[in-house]
Amino acid sequence: MSVTANNPILPGFYPDPSILAVDGDYYIVNSTFSYFPGLSVMHSKDLAHWEQIGNVMTRESQLPLPESGSSRGLFAPTIRYHDGTYYVICTNVTEGGNFIVTSDRPEGPYSEPHYLKEADGIDPSLFFDDDGKCYYIGTHGDPENERFWGDNALYIAEVDLEKFEFKGEVHNVWKSAIRDIPWSEGPHLYKVGEYYYILYAEGGTGPEHSVCVVRSKNIFGPYENNLCNPIFTHRHLGMRYPIRYVGHADLVKTPKDEWYMVMLAVRPAGGFTTMGRETFLARVVWEKDWPVVNPGLGMLSAKLTVDADEFVPESPATSLPGIDKLYDLTKMENFGPEWLMLRNPKDNMYEFRDGEGLYLTCFNEPVWGFGKPSYAAIRQDCHCFEAVATLKGDGLFDGASAGLCLFQSEDYQLRLEYSGVSVNMILRKEGKDEKLASAMVPQGIITLGLQVFGTKAVAFTVKDNQPLVLANAVDISSLSTEVAGGFVGCTVGMFAQDIEEREEPVKALFKSFSYKRITKDPEKGEEK
Image 1: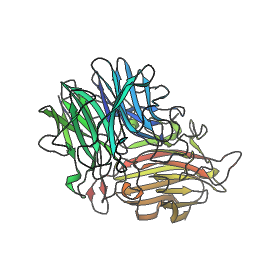
Image 2: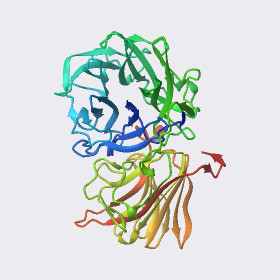
Image 3: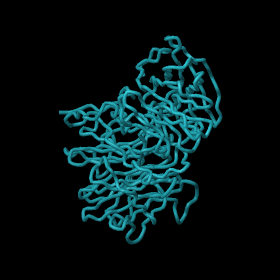
Image 4: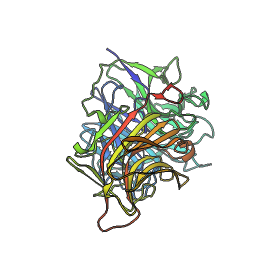
């Protein structure tokens, strides 16, 4: 049998994918930067249908993120398996550096981090050789001849997994396939046949991103350049091509000896990337002992056929990527694994009460700050969607507010704030708030809604049982990588905050939250 995989296989903010196959099951971990919990764990049996089964970093002791900007924190994880143990290696660029965590189950729980003191740089990966030895591969500024920012070298060292430290010499093994190109990064090491292969990225995470490969018969080199490098990229397709920034890849072999590659790419809307970097899938064949990606096509395809039985996830629908999500908060006991919070949330940030809903505490920690705000969100995963939250506004007063937020970063976001009297629509750009619209709304059950059509947004509420549009066709192109910068995509969710520091904090009561995909742009009548 066969199944059809639709690209992206993980839509929305799922960057830097690393993939693992174990006994017919596939697992992907992705970067989460300064969101908590960290490093999503996705599961599939057919490479086409995925479910989120957990997160790697679920405790503050594992993931300290003090005052970490939204594009700091966890960079580029790798997941590997050896002799009954799952290993995830990653970099916390905010605090601690490169580390390894372990578990006997892919979904966790995972151990406390084992920090590798000798491992500088970022983007670490592990490789287990045929003799059981474990090797570290990562990237750092060329220690001998760093000519410019991003002039990186890839290096390899053997790892002692009992002491979690390097054994022997560190070997700088490769610079770049193209002369003077920056940011050789995201390396993974494999052995196929008689060769060791390093698959890595060049050109940075933007328009010049690419996938390259080199090989050697000795793990420490010298490595041979592939004259076809880069073996995969979209940088030659121009600025208007609908899929861009292709790179940062990992390889996987199926039980039927077929090979596939996962990688990140973006889908801009009108030239602006609001969803961040997503996970895509491509087929790989081997020719003359080199990998060839999507042979005969040479670019990502919208669909591809995988020789596998169809996988039907058993997880709750809300933990599946790329579908509508409806949350009756009055019936929930906790957040599912798909929910994200900023940095390390306070212990009393939220509470679910049966029959009542979700209480979010209004701390003096704004969602635009670098503290521990009350913010719970999911990933934006399509260009056109509607997000709606309902809350009971009776308890908000004297500077306390709560509402709906489309969050790109601390300096770029769109908020619908209810303060107990009025609803305000606020667009934050370059670290400054601008009130775009306001409406008086009586206390009671308040509805806050946001519709997004690419780079345009519509904000609405309900007054006297009738929809009330606060603002139409608001330009949100600033909530994009191209304007705001960084490495993240937008999330959308509920927040609560207060301008006062109170002995007894005010709490906002949310009743429901929903995220629905909109299939047509009403202004153009186009499928999205």
